[in-house]
Amino acid sequence: MRIKFNGKTKELWTLWREGGTVKMIDQRLLPHRFEILTLTNHKETVEAIRDMAVRGAGAIGVAGGYGVAQAAIEAQNLNLKEFKKYVIEAADRLRKTRPTAVNLFHAIDRCIRVASKGGITERVVAVCSEADKIALEDLEASKKMGECGNALIDDGFRILTHCNAGALAFIDNGSALAPIRVAHRAGKHIFVYADETRPRSQGAKLTAWELQQEGIPYALIVDNAAGHYMHLGEVDFVIVGADRIAANGDTANKIGTYEKAVLARENRIPFYVAAPRMTFDLKCRSGDKIEIEKRNPDEVNWVWGADEKGNLTKVRISAEGTNALNPSFDVTPAKYITGFITDAGVLKPPFRLNIHEAFHPRKSSKT
Ligand code: RUB
Image 1 (tube, rainbow, N blue to C red):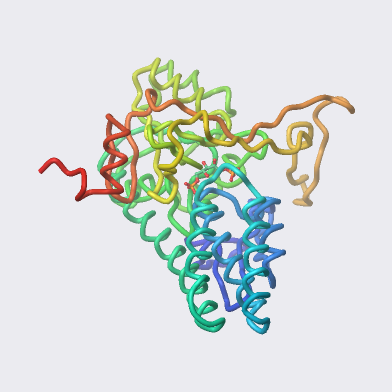
Image 2 (cartoon, helix red, strand yellow; image 1 turned 90 degrees about the horizontal axis):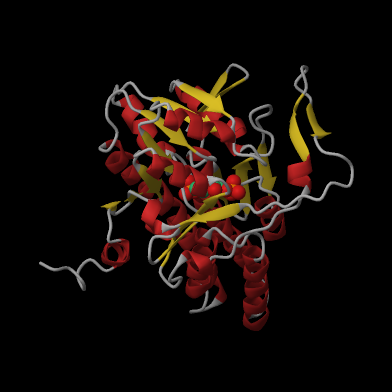
């Protein structure tokens, strides 16, 4: 993505690997400060995922793969038994960071699978190249989603999105924002409503910033305003990302997604979920089996931002001792979803069948 900050322009990925070091844009500081975080070992990567320096399903998946690669490099001088133990323990630490986005588990599993054959050098090389492959697949998937999602966007569309499913939630381009970028670059006159997305405000801090960087016309709205604009007939299309999609199409995404989907149905607005196949969990039959991350209630009781001088600061918005609940995601039942914009094309209902076919095109093809 092209980033303009303090008069400088840079072309960057959200995160990347340099040998045993992982570098990433520190998303906790945006849009007020732009800093690259340098993580020199897998334990630092574990903390970066847990504390949301990197976030968004795609980017978390890539970070998980890189974390296993770091662990393999750290353990390369141990004997084989110790190497295996070290890498498995690192993978467990990475798995325990965030429970909902399935990309993390898929990426770790893939890296562990290739770490189980051959001598140590071979294993280290295999894990590192698998982790890099996951990053490149993520990039490729976002390009494909951009292209096929763009075909659904008409000139003049006013599009609502929730949370951040942009370049920052991926390696680049994003999932929900990828079709929006392609449509804008193709000269379509589109307008985006970016939901603020309390409590971590990914819409205000990240999506609005990304849209501003790209020069895409947008407005930031509070979460509660989405229904108002839908009811006025001022929203033509909704696109969100996803953290885990069950085999029947039920979709876990940032808290508040469910109510946007219900409102879209009530107002006859198409509601699309953009996600690569890496975000589908075919072992999970339906949404009620998806673990929903419960985050620290402090995220509800306090808000982070910058003062007039640009200094980062935190203020309490509720009375001391307030009891708060903070589920990070919700599940939108498949019946509210018009279609999935994926790296294997647009999937329409019946979802169970069409999702299955997207993964096994030859076996279940009717032709
Ligand atoms: C991010 C979130 C995003 C999805 C989509 O939650 O819910 O909408 O992850 O991301 P958080 P992607 O900020 O808590 O990680 O674009 O990677 O599919």
